[in-house]
Image 1 (cartoon, helix red, strand yellow):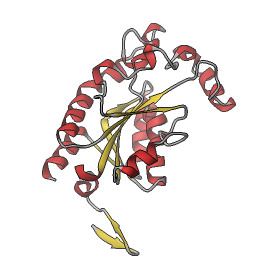
Image 2: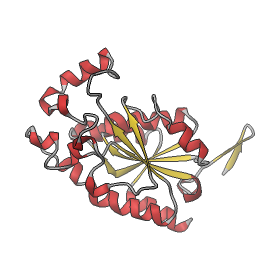
Image 3: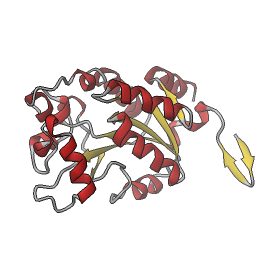
Image 4: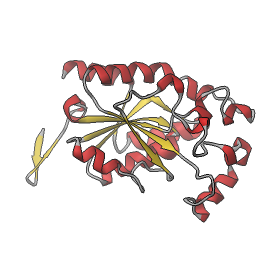
Length: 218
């Protein structure tokens, strides 16, 4: 740690991910995308891009719980009556119509619930969001600040979408962002890799094993 203009600044990954001031943000890992019975698979889409992160993500969450690291799940949601969508949002949705997105993560449906393989514990928070960033129109900042959080460790989907949007918001709100590379994913591999390339140039990107090793050293 060093002091810059009177402010303490973390330098190493061990300092940044110390369990006592970190939280994990699980971004939008929901049945419609992760289950063979969800909207993505039902519309003929290959969902292995998401199922491949389930095992490392489950291991990481177990390690986090053992160390008392808070876990917050976000639930990407489409309103049943388009009450919370904007014109630009609906235009974006229309461009992805081949995914079956009109019935994708619709509020009140089973598909909108968090993936059964990664279900939160009763004491773990769920934050419903209607925008890409987990901070826009949600109490995320209040939850993190109230818990004394300094670092947000981001996992989930999609790397170039809600994950990157949330990472940018973390820094804008004064938190250290950390991305776990083998626990984020996208159905577009090129965009996934491009987003990781951009984020590596600005923030800390680690594997789940590297993160767990850092926790062990702490």
